[in-house]
Image (cartoon, rainbow, N blue to C red; front, side, top):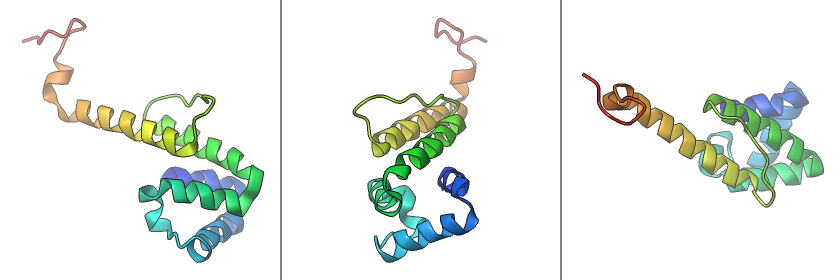
Length: 114
């Protein structure tokens, strides 16, 4: 949600709130539901902003990938939802590495050091 807020903020505060209101009223998508309904968010954003939605999507994705320690790279025939799923996958891998104490004690060859 933080990345979506930041991405929509490029429009300004009032337009950002107008987009959220549109999504809630017209698309029956509350702000809190967005992370669980990414395809609906992307569709609603396109309905609200038309072609400009692609620019906002890229801003959101850049911020999202930055938070996962990755760089966003556009790939043809990949939609917003696919990018978000990939970012989630990367985040889960990073979170797992931080939770797994053996990850930090492995050498480059995958051997555990004492």
